[in-house]
Length: 84
Image (cartoon, rainbow, N blue to C red; front, side, top):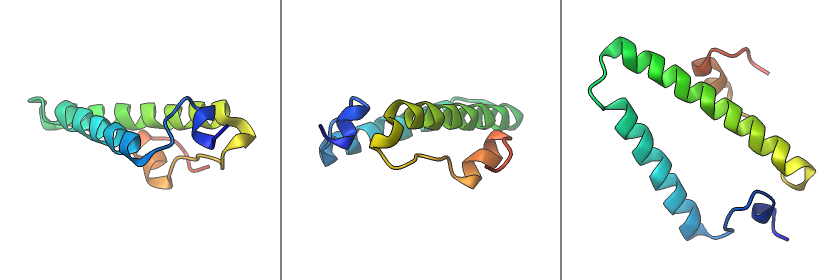
């Protein structure tokens, strides 16, 4: 079983690129949907908080089968979390 299969993901570059495009497109749509600056700031913080939660979930789901997936210090900062 490949490392990617542990998380139910495809192990090829084409699938990874398609996933990345989907994520970036969704982020761009959320951030440019006519929100005022204050709303965007709060939206960005919520998205970063969700990303930290997702990192933690994937890390825990993979267990020792994959290298640790830890959120970056920048992501933690933007989410309002203390550094780990």
